[in-house]
Image (cartoon, rainbow, N blue to C red; front, side, top):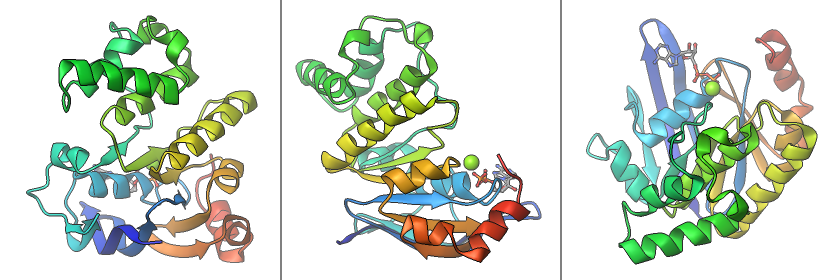
Length: 240
Ligand SMILES: Nc1ncnc2c1ncn2[C@@H]1O[C@H](COP(=O)(O)OP(=O)(O)O)[C@@H](O)[C@H]1O
Ligand SMILES: [Mg+2]
């Protein structure tokens, strides 16, 4: 597998807090990579560094062969093929599901192509029957899927999911696993941040564990989660 994203020795501090420290990792093209660690480990900060919300104090990030700089704005990185979910979905409440997706699709497509894209995304996410519903009226699971659908309207090669399983019941979680598998089969590489470790074991082929901003472990999910240093990090840290 070739490398889609490489973080090389990245660090960032906020005041005295070393949120990410000398962290290096790679995301391989086509994989679903679990990215885990206790609360405050620096996972969401890594997404913010990758997507351009922050620039690292040290080190560099290379995406799809391009070394990212300040010139690569958040918007530019979306155009390069990055998508990310937020811990709290933020769809436009007064628009229908269809219009929510269409608005995003229109940013990179003609009117006709944007309609096609919207239909394609509705099909991929199996949200066709929600198309005419106002997004504010959606159940929580479907809000999360709409968040993903809006990302898909931008044709991403890489999606970073930040704790998308939070608040879902087992049945909704199963549906989400199936959706993630469909997206991955459609060729999208996924970085999967998750506190629900059984979800990580289920959907990820590989996992990276960070703790207090630093690299802790990497490997096959089940094997890594059994390592004493990983168990210690979860027990020692704040649990959720
Ligand atoms: N914008 C910010 N300003 C100050 N501190 C921050 C900011 N973003 C993150 N942090 C701190 O960095 C650390 C890592 O946070 P975060 O990346 O959100 O952890 P995780 O997502 O793994 O739970 C925490 O101590 C958090 O409080
Ligand atoms: Mg977080």
